[in-house]
Image (cartoon, rainbow, N blue to C red; front, side, top):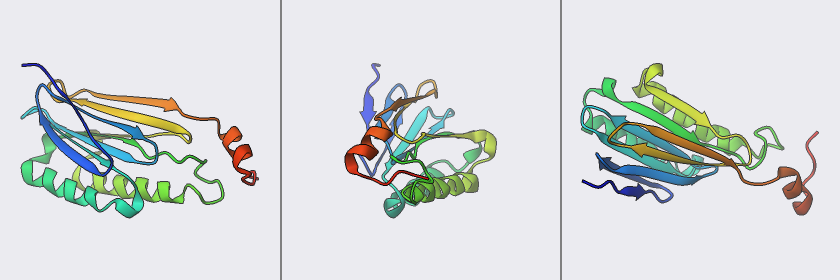
Length: 161
């Protein structure tokens, strides 16, 4: 059987079975959560857009719990959560910090620390996340997307102290 790559849109989640691959790109301030069940070769991924829209993440987590009564087999990888500005820059990174904290708390509520990894992107970076449902491998790619100094100059933003 040939594998397909299943791509997520913003505020979307998908389930896939082996041998398919689930992919979410464009993770700037958005956050992706990928979960793999090696016992069933099933993968799940959500692409959530941020603090005001985090209402789909609880629904996603409830579905994971319903479909996987024994959560001890699951492994998770979390990526994204960038701010286009340094997190302490004039308060502009606060939404990003709220989203990160929400996800960190949600993961700690359902998983033990050895079941998940969180890789927050640094400022000005875009991330992609792949989950191979056959192998359970998470592939995380992070790229620098722009020159912050050039953006600040072009937008006439005050410079940080």
